[in-house]
Image (cartoon, rainbow, N blue to C red):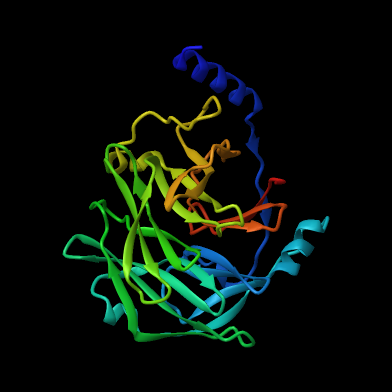
Length: 316
């Protein structure tokens, strides 16, 4: 069978099996709903979900996993009031020129890594900071000297390293824009957990934005948010959406894509992208993603169109 015909048949059956998954909102209350908080990433630590505000306010929001399940299993949509954990750190607005905010977080044992976006003289820059978290109080601490700049592969307005995840003995950081018209060969930055040396890991071209990723599982696989707001067309200059699995009634893209690490490079896993049911009016800027056990995913927006925490059921 010719390769082209085989691809068309595979695409036909993929479209038959693909479907949009509904988003179930988890209702929150309190200051986390303030648009100025701008949730930009999240990760698990000891059965607690940590949500990272973009702006440095000396705290993170924390929700116990049991409260998430309680809310999801309730018929009257119980609201969750996230607690605040202390984040003792230098004033990065002064320490890093052009500091614009935190972008992602990853925990590894009792250590954490956070990416920072900055713009200095119209040049986008990215930094990594790290520190330790107290296992009992959940107080996080970082030191002035524990910061490292990592260069962006290209210069695109407001785009730097948006995802952080741990793979064996490295912390891996994913750049936001990796399309074919932006980068011919894509490499992501990795930092050794032993000596903080920097290395590169090959990554596939993927259109639109990558804004957060789950932890890497026991099969070396992870999911990442793949988001497209049509207003970004000028900056992203995307080619045809070769990952599309559904007929589109909108030019918005809200989905997650699975990757895996093989032979020290990141490749597509071969799983169908998980498409989210779209809001008819607004693009939702999804900035946070974690797995919820084997039940599905939790996703969070920053402030567009509002701060949302939601569950997407996906048994795997």
